[in-house]
Image (cartoon, rainbow, N blue to C red):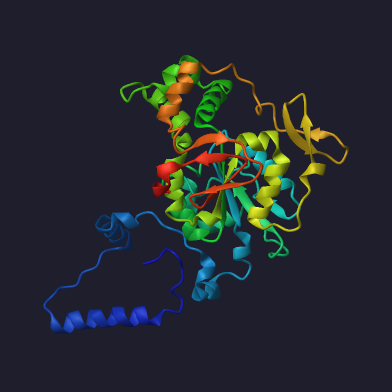
Length: 363
């Protein structure tokens, strides 16, 4: 079975089904019964629970599907690359810089999740391909425009890599990373800034050392701090479905300190033309402490006040504890800056060298 409507011209399936029924009636003593469609569906998914969730496939891979698809629909309306996170690593800044490029087109904003579509994780996936495609314009010239979306929660989603591979098999994936301990600390203070009662009630140390017997809100905050930063675990899941040549890792700290270099390298990885000179369109803002977009009036347009917050220094003992709990210092250890891209285990890392050692076997 398939969840795509690609059986419009499939006469063989109908012939086979009718022949089997005739054979059973003629040559066996079996009594055939049927039930209403709803009950039949419930029975089917009871027997095959693994097929309960749909997997939306790439529509343009099947000629028969294209013949029955509406004429106004096109696979050019699907994104060519995704920024998949994780959160608090610079994805919003990267999204903003990408949207500045004249050949790159971002998705329409969502009323619920703002600049993120969040299709491949959560309930939005069950709304189907048409719902997803409605967030993207149909490019006037499909060969020269690059549609993309950024959803920072894709990175750690268990089902997301399989779903993305099925619908967007040729898409490229952009991952931004910072040291996991900094990411966890940033998320904790992000929640405090948004008046999260759990973050306000517990210290950072209490959050990252929470046990399974602690209150559920505390465990949930602990997981949101720690789980996205377990980079090796999540990257291995993505690489089970995508070749390493379709994935790039960007150092989020390098993106903040030298965005022109990072954006130039990213353009080369994505194969985007024409090449956009970010030197003329980004400028360091001393008041904000990071690079901002240069407007036509020669002024800087920066991200909101919630970006670039300065937090009190992390406790040294907490930093050491996080290096153990997140795996920092093993697979994701940043051991030195480099002027050129560094590649290991088939993966390329912009602006940093990552030590992988024996863990390459898992990647």
